[in-house]
Length: 245
Image 1 (tube, one colour):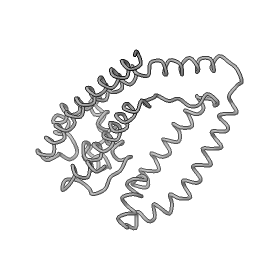
Image 2: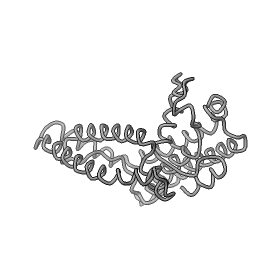
Image 3: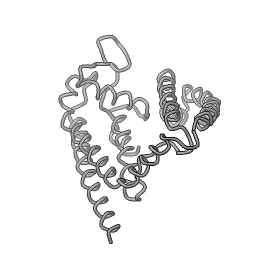
């Protein structure tokens, strides 16, 4: 977050968000397939640059979380608990994510942009957002608790699906180091790919970046991409060596 503020100084908004950069990153991923969300009509995508401090913010969150969990040996691909119906739990989570995304766009911000940035700036928007967020959070929590309880009630005592779930859990645990390495390499390659592709996309973006800002983005993302790949190999290699000993 601190890096994003420093990086964006004098170039972008003086607040941060999560749902905004996720939406922009979606636009970025769809653009090579001929899907241009920032069409000629005036819409949200046509007024906000695709690559900005916002997207840098979420990319750094992913990298920071990955490096920390890799160093502490807690990196893990998690599935819903064995005590619940995993399919139902995943559907509940997916539906909840859609509702959150729609709500964040209607409210023109998420808990980061609306609460942390809005309220600390003492804006009327931030105050209204906070007042609405409190009962909304309580209602959402109890809704999830009830739906999760319903998902647990669908769990059968012993069936083929539970056996399959155990096999999946065992595989994820057994190959944790390999998954850790693969995830690190993929994330690193994504960062390198974005840095190399930025000039081409920037020429077609809704708002072009200044030359020096674009150069900074390219350098930082390229450096972080290489760093993530190298540290992934080092961490996994050292951990594998220690376990063999």
